[in-house]
Image (cartoon, rainbow over all chains, first blue to last red):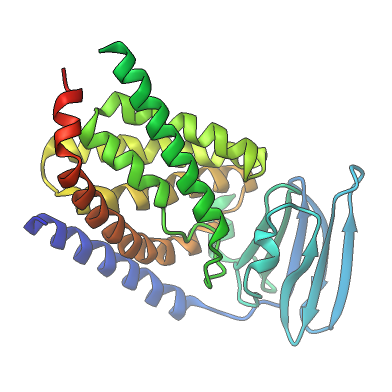
Length: 121
Length: 168
């Protein structure tokens, strides 16, 4: 290993830690989950009401969303790898779960649109 | 020499393919998309140092195509290609610059792979919230990149003789 390797590792870890601290500091609890299917808003669900909902698409694909104790997660889905189902549950602003094969996107938002969203627009 | 090259390609593609399969079989306890060992990158790095930059690129692209249609959903191909191309590009630059050892190059490759995928995902999903994954992926990239880099260096050392002959 060269000396530069250590600088590289140090630099990357420092950047990552700064980013994590910033995320922690800016973290705020979301109030709604926005469900988007194929890039179009499908529905919004409040996070304070426990519920399960299954989205059925025309091509037979489906995703089941569960809201429980203020958290939202993908309970089950018809996609092959189920990466979205394995994803940890989410509750904070701007956290998201994306099911790529089915193009279902869960996104936690607060009462007002977040800064990141404003940048995106 | 041509037949030797064909044989090398076959061998490396088969290896990369098998490693992708092994990777697919090992469930990691972390539930975040993108966190993985990057076993296939071991083969790409060995090719990068042992055969050449151009060959490593072809190898990487063929692997992604094969894996995309077998163990993964073809819808992930776009992401994989973006990750694979960026990863190869930055590894090639780092190798040429001679700034880093194989460990550094491997770390750069691993993280570049994740960054490439995130860039496409942000464009695809039309939402910047995916950037939140980046710090976690950077840390996991350092860990797995270091391991893969050390493994690659050990392997190259042992296969030195083979590569010396394949140079001509």
